[in-house]
Length: 224
Length: 99
Image (cartoon, rainbow over all chains, first blue to last red; front, side, top):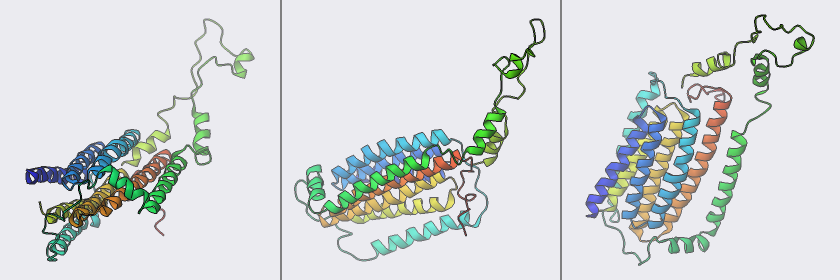
């Protein structure tokens, strides 16, 4: 039974990983990663790591994936077909060589523990109470360091992703000049009586509407 | 199942992630492939914890998950900042820091 579950979960995890790399649309890559994470949580359960599996599903497949989905939806867009750079050819070869090397190193090492089914374990192995006790006694320092790291990362993300006035100054002035001005919006010309009387042709906005200007052109040209 | 099977799966996942980091050009997908590599390492940590019958490896796996979450947060912040500046979202073209 555990062998069947192992193979289902392992095929799911490896298939999800291949999907992340192969799929062209980043959104589908994110979905494939979510599938991979859930399969990996099943593998963790088979290894008697209940709390890690629960954290994997809740934190990773829940929160982090939502973050990814939001950013993919914000940034959007597919990817161009990869060009024929050297790395495109050498990358998969390198990965294959690394996989063979790792398998030789782990399975050819002749360690007894690797081919065993694992050491005997105490009854509450991997439950939240055990993990929590370890975190608050033996591993208190890594726990606190991790919380500080999370705080720093959250602040860093806010600082990085906020709207910066200095950097976008050119863009803002350009926007102000190019913005369409509808007729009869209280300009000096209208106050001085240049405004057409009833029966004349209505005024037209002098500038073409925003949206067809250079910014969008450069954005489309960016091509990612 | 013997622990070696889990280690093999973790090695395969790690190598798929490593290949993806080199092949893909979209920084979002590069971040996803980094996640794959971290998850492969996590699986081997949990497998070793099971092999020894102690929970220390699971603690390390949780810390790795925290580090991965931080990396994702900062990386996605960078992607949003790149998008705001209308730069191409392509790791091959963002080469200004390349000396």
